[in-house]
Image 1 (cartoon, rainbow, N blue to C red):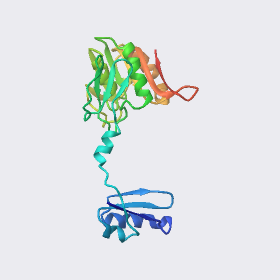
Image 2: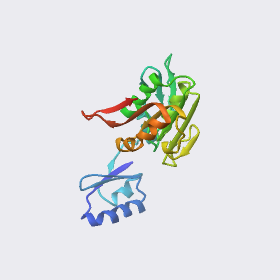
Image 3: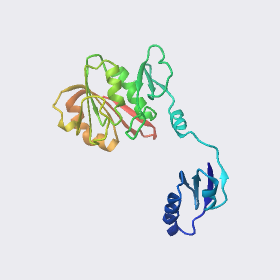
Image 4: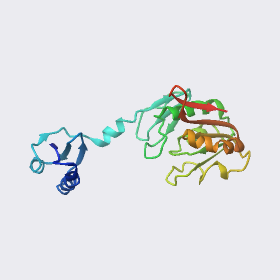
Length: 221
């Protein structure tokens, strides 16, 4: 693979440059401060745009997969991508989640804080509502912890459907229908939803916001 660095003549010529690079079959473009690095499979094509530099071939699939190593969360969870082959440590649940566009991979502190709180709060047989489920990681965790019923909801139709799901929020849920509600969303949305979250469940695990020190936080009510 070969790369070439190009400095557009002006901001207005940038779009035309990108179009020309795409027409030439670039394998990718990285934008810098006043320049772009374009990558090509052969030297001759790259030379049309500047002085080619040989670049090491990159296995992007392998690079992406290596970017998601397994992590231990709390005392019970082993969060792992589907392609990882590491054995689950004794005494832990294998929480398999595919990193994608939906929020919730286990990497963010709020997700980890929610999982740790769920270990303490969710009991076998509990009815659990996951509000704003995203990737479904918290719904899956509730199932692993032995919840009897797990329902998820989200206003994003593209959210994962790993458990029974409805499009909407807590305002559509019957009063007292759940034992635990978990919501890992923004503080603004949590403030708006809080009366309904109190209404639908006797215990609440709330995260997605920062405390007064600027650190990510999770509250159990």
